[in-house]
Amino acid sequence: MIINNLFHLLFVFFFLLLDYSFSQNNHSEKEMYQFPKHPTLQKALKKKHPEKVKYIHIEEYDDSIFPNNDILKFKNVEHIIVYGKQRLRKTKCDTLQKLTNIRIDKNKLSQLTNLKYLQFAYIYFGGFPVELCFLKQLKGLSISFCFIDSIPKEITNLKSLEVLELRLNNIKFLPKEIATLNNLLILDLTNNSITKLPEEVSEMKSLKKINFSNEESKKDVNEADYRLPYPIHTNKIDYVADGKLFIYLLNMPKLQRICVSVDNPNKELQTKSVVIDKLLLKKISWF
Image (cartoon, rainbow, N blue to C red; front, side, top):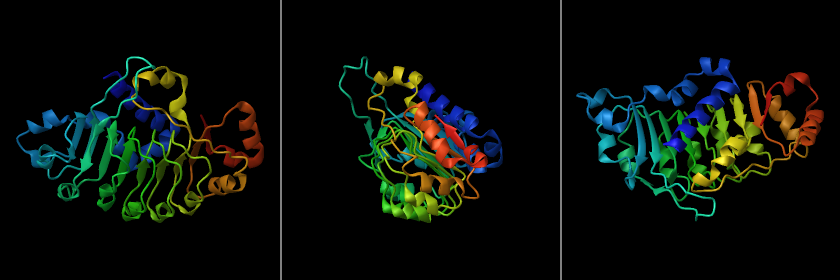
């Protein structure tokens, strides 16, 4: 429960602090992070008219298949949040444990034809669940805390996607196919293992926010890190070495915010000296 609350707060406060005005004007972002309006699965199952249920929030999902038969009762559901069953460590010396193993059933998932927003956390998929890439109507997808180490080329099928959040995984690079997501507004790769600024992002002209920061590595998270059953990775992008591409991204007309992390204050000063332009510097959030 403590980690669940932390997860909620990190998600909510990140987007509130990042750019409140943009949040007010972007429907997909508001839909993705309005947690209070989502009933739990247990409460939703008690409703007399399951076909009217639009939102479901599931904690400690322990079924081996998603979606299960209970979820399929809500044929018109638009937004599902799924947390796996966590196994917390008592001390930092305890062995790292895998989270709940879940397999995505493509045939069952295809029955949820109105699904627009899907969020997963604390789940072990054994890799990016390619089955999700066939939800062509999906507008928001979040797969965080899930041991994802790559993004499949099938991501190109998600033409309607506006928000892609892959925080706290182990992604090292982006596939070239991600550049075909012409409607994507927000790309969040907080705390992954990216070492070079991805050139693919420069082709994504609709982007308004990009996050390459290591926000989750802050002291308050590190103090609770021993309770998480996996390590926290960090992006190690050298924005000085990749200065030309970095400036190009900042000059993209629709881009409002790019979140970055650097190793020390001197590196921040060096990065600022590369950018120079005051208007471009205002687009950068430092973590």
